[in-house]
Image (cartoon, rainbow, N blue to C red; front, top):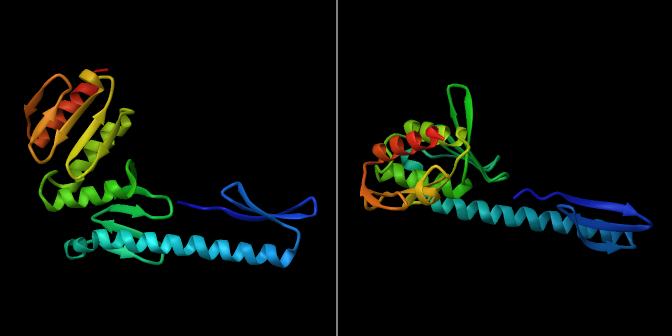
Length: 192
């Protein structure tokens, strides 16, 4: 997401670099500066377009308490905060900043699942994910399921399907509430 743009003078040539990769070389200073300024505008415009697309995806949550900061290109929902520049999500609670996996897709999926009453309250969901992360275990969340990946599980994962209310344990599929799934995951990953 974050682009570093540099104009470097070396060996009587001007080099335009974006995130460490050389884009073009120039002999003329004015041409180099013009290309440098155009590249900055191009990247700023593409970021603005992406920001507007993301906003259109979450606009329906404004009435539920979604706060948007256009200046810093960030979104916040009840302590869950997304930053466009880094594509990172954090949960801010009691002076603690908990980093979460998944970027904007995680942020949006969490909003959808909360609105549909699939994950209970936000705080207990995030505290569960915090325990998963502390245990050095990865997860993936989308609007349909939460997949937790660990060698502790049969076949390396446990997945909860929010639509069916079932857990895929690898060797079997069983009916579970989401709270039962959370307990199963935490008991399994803490045993190793």
